[in-house]
Each structure stands twice: as structure tokens, then as C-alpha cells.
Image 1 (tube, protein in one colour):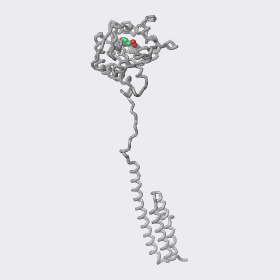
Image 2 (cartoon, helix red, strand yellow):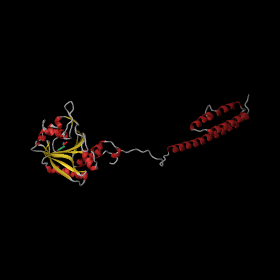
Image 3 (cartoon, rainbow, N blue to C red):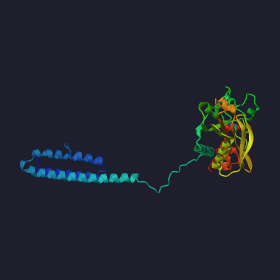
Image 4 (cartoon, rainbow, N blue to C red):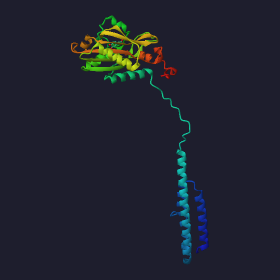
Length: 333
Ligand code: DAH
């Protein structure tokens, strides 16, 4: 049986029609590729129709062949055009997707801020680093030796009663001041030295507006040849001016076992004098305890109450506010 040319022509026509319709409908590049394979691929529908060519009379073949080529070209063109359209649409969709609406309200992220205690610690350490001091630190759980004995507190000396100490069951204690850093640092280094140390201290104190059982101190000390009380006073003056500017200050004679002579410094707060630091010339017994020759070296030292300085700087009336974690209070600084 021979195939009639008109039959093949009809098949080619309907193939092109259905292919054009499917290409026009295709919604994705994947779908389009499947259509290409299905119609124009090696085992595609066009190949199948052309399989019937063998049964045509030889004279008809060129005509049908030309028709098949026209169909093929038309479909290829349609596929290419549709591909370009889909690609453009895909890019446009991606751009629309990634578009940033700068008028949309942002997500609020609370910034937080530095606590007044950390803030004043930073300021004070900066001042001393500017004066050439080295930053050091020491342990909060300490032995009697570093907290008291090497600082010239004799075992039964009443000076120990000035610091209501929290003792641990193993005989150690919670350091009552940062002066332990003096001993630890001096034992590990040779003069000359200028050192500043920040730390937490502990005392069995009754808590009130100006006392906390856990508080912070900053210790600074210097050991060199020919250091005098004038150097100490000048350093304190420069320091307080850098921190507070012009502020009424007074030096009072005092006593500490580890300094001789000793003084306390008060500044004006809430219309009264508030003690903010103890200081003095390092006692020769302390220099001897760390192996320095007091005939060659002298030194000065001071311990500052950080909370009290923060209270003066920020006009805070009660030390307990610094630890209440009340955001209405803390947000003011
Ligand atoms: N450690 C003393 C205290 O807590 C403060 C102090 C006084 C420190 C005199 C010093 C100093 O370095 O020289 O009461």
C-alpha cells in the first residue's frame, strides 16, 4: 500500500497546528524543552510522520520533503521565540522578587548601652594608660598572705577589723581590696613600674546608700627611684581633673598598714564629702616583703572606689541603684 501525498500533508499540517498551540501554552523553559524533544527530537513526532515517506511514490518525495522542512523551521522559530519570552519573564520575575522596598518600616533592634560602672572603669583605665601605666589583674579568691600579711597586716593587728572579711572554709578568703595585685605584680617584676588594676572586691559590709558587699576597686601604684608624696599627689590631681574637670577635692591624713604616710581623698557629692580613694607611700615593710631594697626604691599606691566615682560622675544618690537592673534608671546614662 502506498501512502497518499495528501494524507502526509494533512498529518504535517495537524502536527504543526498542535505543536504551535502547545508551544504557545508552555509556561516554563522545562516544558518548552520537552515539547522540542517530543516534536523535533530523533524519536519525535516529525520523524514519525516522515517515516511514512518511504511509501510515497518517488516523484512526490521532494514536495513532501520541502513541506516537512518548512514545518520544522516554523516550529524551531516558534520554540526560539517562546524561549526568549520565557527567559525575559524569568529575569523580570527574579528582579521583582529581589526588589528592596526602602519605604517598608524596619525591624527595631534595641542597642543596649554600657553600664555606668563599666563606663567609668573604661575612662579611668584610659587615663592611666595615657600616663604610661600597665594594666594588671589578680584573683578574687585570695590567700591571707597576699590580701593581708604581705601588705603588713600583722595576724592580730586591729587594722584587719577595718575590712570585714569573707573567709572560705579552706582558709582562703574573698579579697577585700585590689591591693593584693600590688604584691603579686611586684613579686613577678622588677622596678621601675607603673601599674593599674581593676577588680571586684568583697566585704561583709552592711549595705546602705554608699556601701555594697560586692564592689569594684581600681588600684594604681608605681615603684621607682626617688618617688615622693608629691608625685602621688600630682598623679591624683591629674587623674581627678581628667575624670571630673574642676571639682572640690580634699586630702585627709589616714592610716593603712601598707602605706606610710597614708591619706584619704574626698570629693563633693550631694553637698557633703565622700571618700573615693585611699593612698600613700608604699611602706618599706611591703617593699621588703616582695624583695625590693627600700633604701634604693620608693613607691606610691592608691585604691579607688569605682562605684563611688560613678555616683559622683552621674549624680547618683544610692549605690544600690547601680545593681538593681532597673532599665528606667540605666537608660539615663
Ligand atoms: N586597699 C585600701 C582599701 O580597700 C585602699 C587603699 C589605700 C589602697 C591605700 C592603696 C593605698 O593602694 O595605698 O581600703
